[in-house]
Every structure is written in structure tokens, then in C-alpha cells.
Amino acid sequence: MAEFPIVGIDVSSYQGLMDWGLAKKQGITFAFIRAEYNLAKDKQFDRNWFEAKRNGIYRGAYGWVMGNPISNVNQLNHASFLWNIIKDDPGELPPVCDFEKALYGGGPSTPAFGALQAYVLALEKLSGKKPMIYTSYGYWRQWSPFATQYWALSYPLWIANYTTRPDPLVPAPFPTWNFWQWSAGGNGLGESYGAQSGDIDLDRYNGDMESFKKFAGIETTPQPPSITLESRVSKLEKWAETKGYSYENY
Picture 1 (cartoon, rainbow, N blue to C red):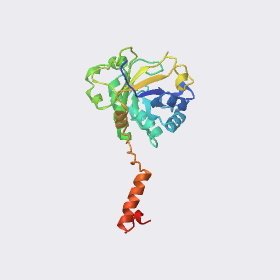
Picture 2 (picture 1 turned 120 degrees about the vertical axis):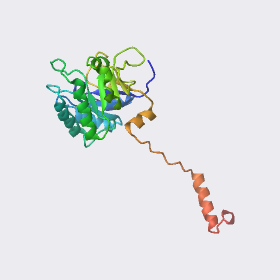
Picture 3 (picture 1 turned 90 degrees about the horizontal axis):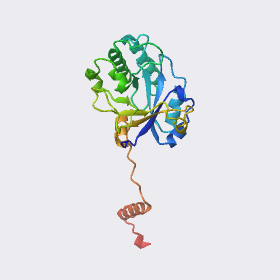
Picture 4 (picture 1 turned 135 degrees about the vertical axis):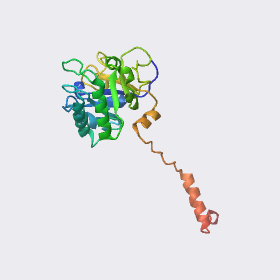
């Protein structure tokens, strides 16, 4: 497995009451937190959003690209619903448009890429940030023409691909990935990361901490230089000499 030192999790109400302090102790740097599903606010969102921040974990909120039917008009409603949840505290990472199979019945609807683009553009206008696209390698490729969605290259990619390869498979036209959901159901690691559920989604960032903070727009505040007692005494002596005093006279 390639080295990706910046690790995170993504959670929803399915994880139950999260122990965010334990997640932080386990080395979690960031978390994607579900804000809404099918125009319903995730029941654990407020607590997760507050507790993740309180424990120093960088946050990104996600909502689903969906509706019944999956239409462009519905995506405007979904984008507005998501933004209204987070607009007073939008988090440190871009909001995420979750493009995957809905959890309730029904086959694929068209135009899938048109609906995704409508959601992305609406959320970008509302938030003032380039939203992230979440999808899986297989789901993206089931839509046609998946390889020519060049508009999507303007947006960061969070890819789901569960593989033993050192890097995830990335569908065309994406040349690379920003975040990788590399483990999910069946991993049995939920409790160790503070979840009440047996499983938890695990993620990696494609870069080091410096590039992560740059991606998130987090400014690193330079620390003021330390001033030793000796340097303070030296400055005081120099000031005294300008006033005609000298410690040699005492």
C-alpha cells in the first residue's frame, strides 16, 4: 500500500453516536459527514459537525445527488437543502456531491450526468467553493458517455474503490484523485474509530499535510520568534547606553 499519511473517515447516522475524541486519538485528520439524504437532514449531523470541530478534525459535508425521479430540477432543491444546513458553518473542506446508487429501490434514471452537473453548479454558486464529486469507479462507468464528462475535471474527486492495489482505480476522464475511500462495509473497524457500528468508511488524502491545508484553504499562522531572557537583557543594555547609562558604573 502506498504511503498516504493523511487519513480520515466518513460517517452518517448509521455509525450511531460517534466518539470523536477516540477518532482523533486514532490519527483521524478529516471527516466527511452526511448532512442530508433525499431532502431529509441526517439525524446525527448537528452532533457530528460540532464534535468533529471541537476535537480538531477538519470537516466536509455531503449530500446525495438524487430525487424521485433523478432530474435536473430536483438537484437544485437538493443543493439548496444541503447549503441551508451548513451555510452558517460550512466546514473546512469543500461540500460534496454524493453520486452513487440510491439506497431505496428504482433503477438508473437519466440524465445522470446532467443531474450531477446541475447539482454541482448549483452548490458551487451557493457556497462559492468548487464542490467535490464522490463516486465509485464502477458506478461512474455504468453511465454513458462516462469518459467524455470533461466538465467534471474542474472539481476535486473523492473516489470509492475497494482494492488491494496501492492506488485506486480512477474512471475516465479523471486523471487522478484527491480523496480515496478505500475501506467500507465488512471491515469491522467501527468501534476502534469511535463508532457504535461495526463498520466505518476509511479514507485517505492524496498528499502530505502541507498540500492538504493548501487544498482546504487553511492558513498556517507563523509562530512569533521566541525571545530569550538573554536577548531581552542585551536589548535593555543597548537602550540604557543610548541614555548615557552603563552597567559598569554600578
